[in-house]
Length: 165
Image 1 (cartoon, rainbow, N blue to C red):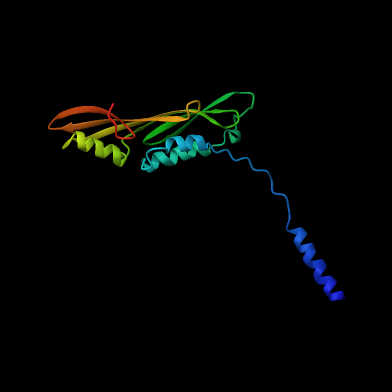
Image 2 (image 1 turned 180 degrees about the horizontal axis):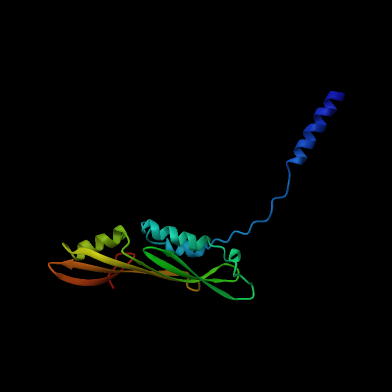
């Protein structure tokens, strides 16, 4: 009986010693932004996608300049191919973004549309622009592509669905 009580006492002590309160963690993730930018095209250039995820997971409250008295914070994120300027509210929610990238890998649907409409033309460069607004919840995306064929150059505008503008 004594050995049984000792085992029961140790088991109970171990059970209660394993329960501890974890510190509160504040994770800000802007899922509305992530869903909007990934809505149609999943094959966006991996470098662009990585930077957009960094923008979505950025916690403005950890910035040394953060002060909850201000309503809006503007943060610029860079990669060699371009940048994203994001406006956050004081709670860390993305209000809007302006994104611009040059000479990235074009999505398949965009390339197929270009090849179909402009056969034998070569892509010489491109600019990818995204405008996101939390009010509308929509990310407007467009590509401006420079094409060349036989010494001639044209510039075409196409959206992320492969529709020319």
